[in-house]
Amino acid sequence: MQPIFEQIRNIGLVPVIRLDDPSKAVPLARALKAGGIPTAEITFRAAGAERAIAAVAQAEPDVLLGAGTVLTVEQVKQAVAAGARYILCPDFDPAVVGYCIEHDIPVLPGCSTPSEVGQAVRLGLQAVKFFPAETAGGVAALRALAGPFSKMKFLPTGGINEKNLCDYLALEQVLACGGSWMVPQKLLDEEDWDGVTALARAAVRAMLRPSFAHLGVNSADTAAARQTRDDFADLYLETPERDTDVSVFVGAFEVMKAPGRGAHGHLALCVNDVDRAERYYRALGYAFDEETRRRDEKGRTTFLYLDDPVGGFAVHLLRR
Image (cartoon, rainbow, N blue to C red; front, side, top):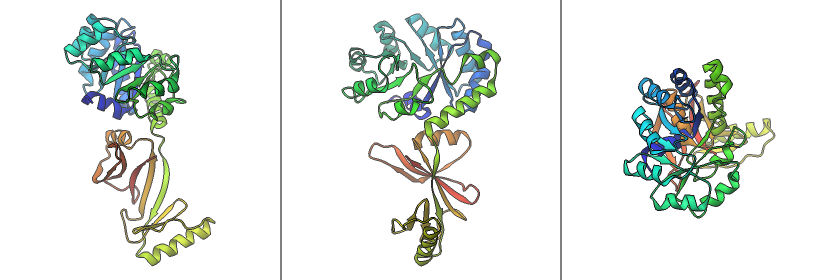
């Protein structure tokens, strides 16, 4: 897959933005970035799209900018010249798609039928925009399309919000989800950048759904671990569970058979996608211990420790 699509995949969310006033583009991009979403689709539905893209590309070059609602080859040229890194179309126009392929410009044409996706496959495209997602049948329709086109990645847009976001992202072929709910017009009109940051952060949380998985408690040896486990079992009226080579379990507690990571032990956080969570936490300044990374058969990270403890606890991520 093209590197830019890998980046979009790890971000997981693409805010769709119509900006009539290009002067708002930079503070908006910074607000989204502060909320954990360093990408956006700025649509050509607004006359100021080209200037908005240029302003963000110059001021925040690490924000992954896409140009949306691109209908003509001329708009592709304008968008790329302004600094857009990828192109999104509401339809499948052979002229636009062909130009992008010829000039090595990442493009996601709008597709909602097998015929359109088939055209994309035959042209060698790796990803398309599933639009309008909800009107075209939603998750069920996308699942049906993904069946025969198993190697194609989809970016669904249209009618997606916090309530149905994870239903789409649960599909392996979904690259990311786009939507305007992260940047409502009211916040743009009021220039409420803190509000945009809060909504972006809420969208990231809805995507990752971080939750407490278990608490790891350090013990001196196996006997001490089993005694601690039995004590927790008594207190929580639980039945002791697994007994592994390194630890014993009861309820939400993992008791280590030897002193382990962290002064007090470790904390496990469950997330929908460890790779997306890693990107988000790295942006906040956290580092990770690469030696602890575990992957599944599809190459997805399933387990990963942060480098540094938090409050005396080592912290690791688990894929839900």
